[in-house]
Image (spheres, rainbow, N blue to C red):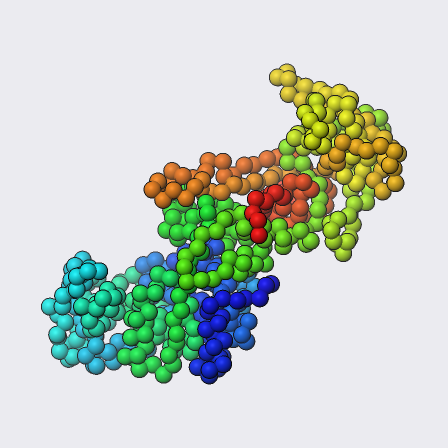
Length: 543
């Protein structure tokens, strides 16, 4: 994996050299309200790789402070994704486990006169906050006494008030040019049971209050977050300062990663699942890590893709083909290259004895001899791809089979097409060909040059298989049109064909010669082989 070099690493190195930090400590803080997607992978990879490159470590901390959206199933899915990517957190924490400490620190702010209970509704709080050009105005409850605020906050904790009737707010500056500093809400009332805490709590801290405290408690040195939190950094620093935390973490923002023709919204992805537009969060067309895993994308390709996309202080958009490029780079020397036919056309070798089956030897990967060899078979009855045959050769660039032409079958013989059979609609259903026994691959035969080389599968030993091929789930990046209307109706295509008689286990990856890289689907079995195409062989991406 390439060496990391970006502005955050420079900050970390300077902090180590100056003594501001003795060991780098980062954290990845997902909210367990959805599956992780490729956009989250930027934060995940960045936190783990930066800390590792400088001898530090990374915590996994679930930001579970909103029970109305969170679920234990998402917790397990996130853990599985992180493990699949090959990362091992130094610790696994939950924001909800800090609730007692967070509550006591809220009490501390009330006693210091820096927090108050407010009875304004959510709409009223927003109205009182002002605009970017106009200052806010004080809540009529801003000057409650410390004693009254302590009593009311305790009664909120005891469940004496309905949701939305009271909140705890920081007392900062309603005229601040930064709207986030205009008495932000610190706590709200929620009666939804928590996935870990049950009904133990009915008041929950807001992210902007809980997160900096959790970073400080854990000793996080560099709290990395996306660019939309840039305006929240003054509040982050204020919370750490006024709560008198012993450790002072540093928040650093970086740009989000957007990918063309890719849905990067958790809300939209959830809508796709709930409306049945996809087959679940692990649908191979989904940009979730679960979907990418089922499609066959490798962890190594994802990490290389994220690191190659760079890191800066601005949001960036890159081509989806770039990820495909790194998949090909990762698999080209790892994957066995086998023959498969996804759209079969029957070929009968008329001069080959009926019932005879020949065993041949083929390399597993012509570019990596270490992967060894395998046995394949050859007999009278074969299948080839329909696109590998035409009645007449269209031009000099056509290097496949046509009537009167001779091609080599990979690792086998030259065959010549002599005749075709058609159905009642005129469609070609069978090619009658002859083979030359003197032309066996590896025999040294050089008397003539074939019109190209094509793949085949011998029907005497072939295994039937289903092949799923995918295109982008969304057709364009038109933000004006509802994303449901922009879904690609041809994003999933299923074909029936044949593969060589080899051993196939779920998540085994192969290169189908001249077609693309495929993975054995997790639901595949010996009785029903299913392959998902990871990427085609051709790429339009230029590194």
